[in-house]
Picture 1 (cartoon, rainbow, N blue to C red):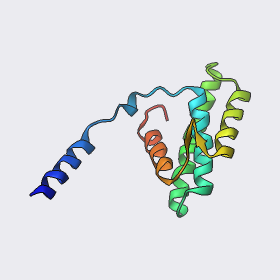
Picture 2 (cartoon, rainbow, N blue to C red; picture 1 turned 180 degrees about the horizontal axis):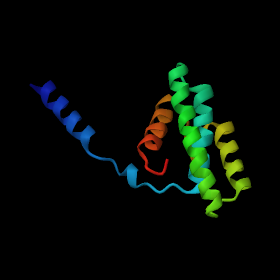
Picture 3 (spheres, one colour; picture 1 turned 180 degrees about the vertical axis):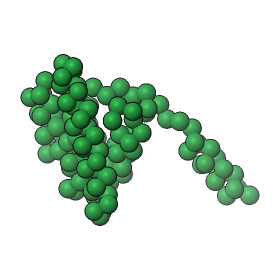
Picture 4 (cartoon, rainbow, N blue to C red; picture 1 turned 45 degrees about the vertical axis):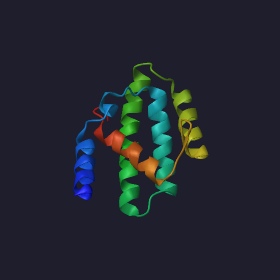
Length: 115
């Protein structure tokens, strides 16, 4: 009975919408996401399928970043600097990238209408 209750709670909690969809993506955040997905493709992907989903997030981010640059949200040099730093250091803002964080970032990108 306890297992059923825990399972039910887990399912219910999983269905609660996360406020990620309302999350604001500025040029710096997009740049860091692209750098993180580059790092994830090279270092965290367990197979070619996983690498492919990270690459698709990068492509979506690149399109969103172009719009951010056109709108003056970020300058191309700043975006390149943020992207390269994230990729080189293996960090997404202050978080050290790992397989689980890579999946979380990808899922956030995948669920966000900005991309």
